[in-house]
Amino acid sequence: MVMASSGNSHAKIILIGEHSVVYHQPAIALPLPAVKEVVTLTPRDDGQQRLVSRYYTGDRQSGPNQLNGINCLIDSLLTRFSLQSQGFELTVNSHLPAERGMGSSAATAVAITRALYEFAGVALSHDQLLADAAISEQIIHGNPSGLDVATASANRPVWFVKGEEPKPIPMHMHGFLVIADSGIRGQTGEAVKAVATFRATHLSQATRLFNELGGLTSQARQAFEADQIAVLGSVFNRAQVLLEQLGVSHPKLDEMNEIARQNGAIGAKLTGGGMGGCMICLADTESTATRIRRALATAGVTQTWVQPFLSEETV
Ligand code: MEV
Figure 1 (cartoon, rainbow, N blue to C red):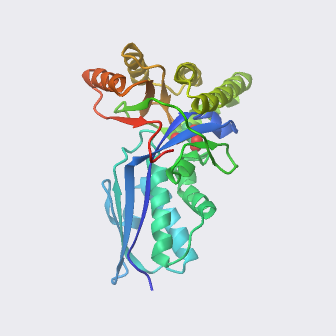
Figure 2 (figure 1 turned 90 degrees about the vertical axis):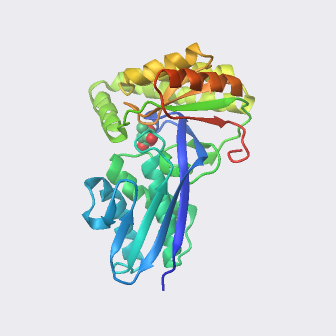
């Protein structure tokens, strides 16, 4: 007997290590618990399986191809719980902008997995959650590192190495992270493919870039532990240069990074897959963060968020 259920998750921001994490270098990501996603599941007597979301509402199997990953995840869990012919309405309520490098697809996968386990009355371990949510991420992104899913299900900053258990990292950094949306759809799948092609044709250069990004991630971790925002700022700026060399930046992101630096940001870089999506930068005080947000808004940026590094929810 199934019961109405719900599952939640939230956005994430990769602080450093995107792309190189796919090649086994470490990455650090910060959960953004304030930017939430909730999935609810209500049983239906007529056997229909309906999806209600901001992109599509209707029979879940008749939706656009973008739903293939989610449908595959749902099929696999329904089969596991012998609920293939159970009717339901699955409602996705998300505050995450899609395709902006904030882990929207992973957050959806995590929330759906949690909701379906509760629906079936089956207990869910954290390891199982990571493994199941990865089903749809593999279809959507091809070769995901697992970082997005790990952070969408975490409530503390995580140190992540592909294939290893994510570890919470000590966070003593004062200051603020400003996140700004370029308004251009990020293309994580495309960007991951472009980096794979670059690596196939320029192996030694790509390996050097990945190794340096991995080294910067270790430096960032030390900076977080020792509360050294200036060090973290240089790490961000250098990582941006390396990501540009990998070919995953975008002129709009470059422009936004520059505006942020001119308005007091201590360092700035793209975050996530790139080729669009969001940038992040560091502000030492809330008033600097406000100045950066205003300057970006004057340049036409419509969505920004500010996250203190030391907040009750992430420490
Ligand atoms: C995407 O949010 C992060 C990438 O490193 C890809 C991945 O880790 O799977 C670009």
